[in-house]
Picture 1 (cartoon, rainbow, N blue to C red):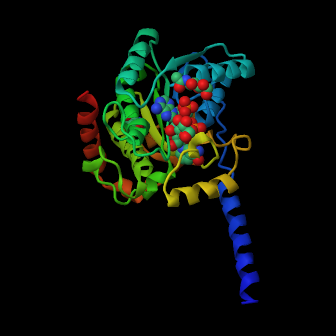
Picture 2 (tube, rainbow, N blue to C red):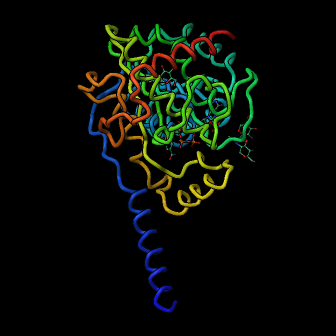
Picture 3 (tube, helix red, strand yellow):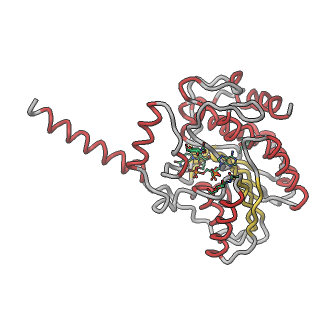
Amino acid sequence: MILFLPGFFLFIVIFCIFVRIYLSWPTRWCRSEKCLIGKTAVITGANTGIGYETALDFAKRGAKVILACRNKSKAEEARRKIIQETQNEKIFVRIVDMASFDSVRKFAKEMEETEDHIDILVNNAGAYGLEKKKTVDGHPLLMQVNYFSSFLLTNLVLDLLKKSTAGRIVNVSSMAGRKAGQFDVNKIDEFAPNNYDHAFSKLCNILFTIELAKRLRGAKVTTYSLHPGIIETGFYNNVTGLKNILFIIIIKLFSITREEGAQTPQTNIYCSVAKGIEKYNGEHFSCCQRVAPYKTATDAKLPQKLWEKTEKLVFKH
Ligand SMILES: NC(=O)c1ccc[n+]([C@@H]2O[C@H](COP(=O)([O-])OP(=O)(O)OC[C@H]3O[C@@H](n4cnc5c(N)ncnc54)[C@H](OP(=O)(O)O)[C@@H]3O)[C@@H](O)[C@H]2O)c1
Ligand SMILES: *[C@@H]1O[C@H](CO)[C@@H](O)[C@H](O)[C@H]1NC(C)=O
Ligand SMILES: *[C@@H]1O[C@H](CO)[C@@H](O)[C@H](O)[C@H]1NC(C)=O
Ligand SMILES: *[C@@H]1O[C@H](CO)[C@@H](O)[C@H](O)[C@H]1NC(C)=O
């Protein structure tokens, strides 16, 4: 016992050090100096976290940036900060609530009326650990916010993206997509077992990207999914379930914070601006490099099945 205790504490200390190093390991930096003057970028959930940092970077590159957010006052505040920091006045707020298909349609219609092209769409808005609630459209909230609504949004603005000289669609997924062992494409409209709602919705982003890339073949638009890295944002505030809460405690204690985490939007930026990645259309990225698709995402027919199922579900409204 006397020998056991110090060993145990040593183990805990070493374990903590490893977790901290792992979680704060800097991702690579996007070295592209691409200028975005004359380009239009749309970022959902751009008022805070990774979406905000991505918007800020695009603004520095001179883009016209559309902050697609659900809360007007939060979005206006983000707009003010971005203009103040970059002196780029072409920052606009548009309201979209990803928990409502009507709101997504209204947003897309506004885009059609006000924009003649979109060059970059970053599907970033996302939620984590929400209780098992349903949306006004009757779908599981996490699935609709993280996946169905970006599916709908992407499809509704696809024509605007095709008018770009080299449009890009970047889907912010997550390594959580990896966990999706028990994913069943026929059950996407139900709450997931084992609190896998978030993991499944993120897996859908990856699969969707694969299928979208296939459907975009021959167009000038390319699409990528990515894992942005782990960072303590508002993202982990509302969680339930013991396993998730343990996970959150580790994140809160050891992961890099927003302020330290300037590198966290780097993969978003990389997929949006880096030259020469078009040949990887549809593929998955992490740390500014292409990574092999997760095992569950390699069933050759799954992306197509998911697309067809989602299409029926989303366009019936
Ligand atoms: N942070 C991480 O460690 C991590 C890891 C892997 C993947 N990701 C992914 O990165 C993306 C951004 O995460 P984050 O860490 O930056 O989170 P965050 O700070 O919580 O930001 C999430 C953004 O999504 C918006 N949003 C949530 N529900 C919405 C809705 N119904 N309609 C419109 N917008 C909505 C939020 O708006 P409000 O401010 O109004 O709530 C906020 O702007 C997410 O897709 C997430 O899955 C993050
Ligand atoms: C928007 O956010 C502000 C500040 O957090 C909050 O006071 C307000 O109620 C929110 N508005 C809506 C419509 O959710
Ligand atoms: C991104 O995902 C959304 C849904 O997740 C989909 O509509 C869009 O076509 C996908 N593009 C990618 C890159 O997934
Ligand atoms: C998280 O919980 C707070 C307080 O319980 C609540 O006001 C907020 O709306 C929740 N956020 C989400 C994204 O559900």
